[in-house]
Image (cartoon, rainbow, N blue to C red; front, side, top):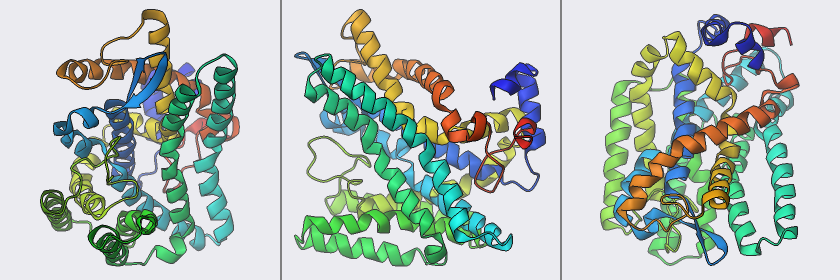
Length: 395
């Protein structure tokens, strides 16, 4: 990407990305993936706070102190869209690999390398950082808080990797079957006071629902506006009923101190909410295709997709870097180090998001090459990777 910038600036970069994009590519799929990643990143930045008091740094959430903000989580908890796109892309990708005579093992190795190659970098950096902090006298509670922020989102990668590996087995599985599993598990563990450990069955089953919807989409299943409205309205009504009458939390993310989380493990309410999100995603396909026909808009989405894993892995580190640097230079600041329990914090927090984004851009520049492969160049264009540039074709 830096090479491209040197060869003619932004306009030339946009032109090259446009020229390198296959005409048959459904750009809306990349748009949905970008939307899902940005939703996760912005959601974490808005509902996670590092409070500096008593010589330690601890995590806090505005949803814990101001539950009326729960609707914020409905906008930014976009994991179901990512699994929908993942099911669609992996199913098409595996079918194309088989058509080329490529083995399952080779296909899976390519997918796993793209997922986990960037993890090595964040693992090494944070292992060293944790050691340095402990040797320097930083208290263990602070190191544990920061480590949890960085590592806790990685559960998502393990689940996504498992579903990717199972694609040949689940590609034709109807979404109603994993949905039924979640329904019965919740009835047992929540309705009949069954063992809490049963909930972990919902981790694969819950995310299989949107993944299987994506697989059906890839096979030519219903993806029209009627299906979109059915999923959106049906899933939305079911979620509203579960929250209003069945005791499920209103927040679609974990809240510190809550007795029940919709994500840890995923509940029936999280799954029905995910169905509503999948419906909204299908309804957005047309508008996204029209918007992404514009070369500049498409270039921005393609570049984000090239660094999707880097953005996901390093976004919490960006927030930590900004928070710790500001604390060292200026002391506790509103919306950054203060307890998220009042309107002042709510008004101040969004002002810090551009600063977090700048820090993330710096981390992307430093570590993006681990995701893009040899020489830090763009990945080969497939149904699951963004546009390949002329330079990357020569790699």
